[in-house]
Length: 361
Ligand code: SF4
Image (cartoon, rainbow, N blue to C red; front, side, top):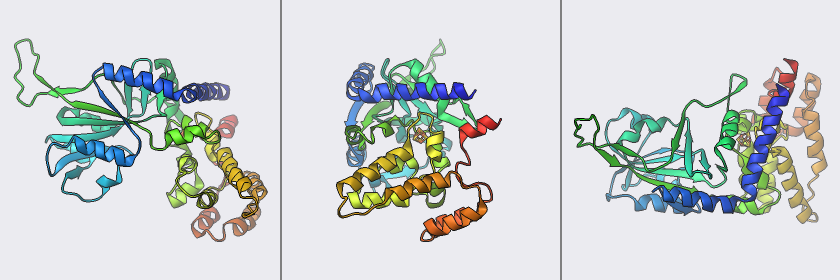
């Protein structure tokens, strides 16, 4: 079983590697296929562009009803404005009123046939009363073939200590349509349909910048399964950066960036162990820290050795006595994390190490 899952993970890593290495070429091919099928595609660089482009489709001068079923919400839409009225996904589902705009984030695109894949999206149940469907797809979230997608889907969902194939899958291959509000049923039971304006935004959001970095490029293999966030002891306390967000968030100045990395990881390695596409997250963090250190070796005296040794010690942290002194030494200035470690009854680090768990079974 362990060998099987390791084999699948290695294959998934290869699938991601092949796409990311030639991302530009495959994206163009995907764009052509989606456009041929009648879906309007736009290349969107950042949040600002995204908000402008969504606003361009507003037909009214005020209170355009809009719903976001997406982790990406441009900050323009988080502040009050007469131009729009935000409704939650729950409201959208329970209401029978028309929703003028639904913004939804897709999980994958398939280059082979230009399909767009949505997983576990509650808002799909209100497609029948939406006028404009805005689909956001991050440009690293594509796969080449249907078969590749099948393998990644197997690794996408982890529940009750096992990988599970998602059951809620919606594949979009053409602009959607809905039953017309003035619908008349014809004798053959068919009915009139209205088109839903379907837009696809190929969203960069700093991804092409990461692509240029030989250190961080591997982070683009991410399939957004959320497992690294679930097992991160720092995220559990701070709710600030999941391990993958910490790696890809490089919008800070270099010295701020170093502090950001140091303050938001214990380098415990839990994220490495659970990542289904084998992204070596802590190694990426350390390499980035080391690179910044080498660049500024005179001004900054960052002793990375301490962090390496901290990590390996933490991985053996089953001894309560050791844990007490270790915690005092390394986390005394971080109250939240200090208290959290202090309260842990079970071995703190690698508690969810999938491989060792599976080995004991
Ligand atoms: S980096 Fe995190 S969210 Fe991305 S695939 Fe790996 S475990 Fe999942």
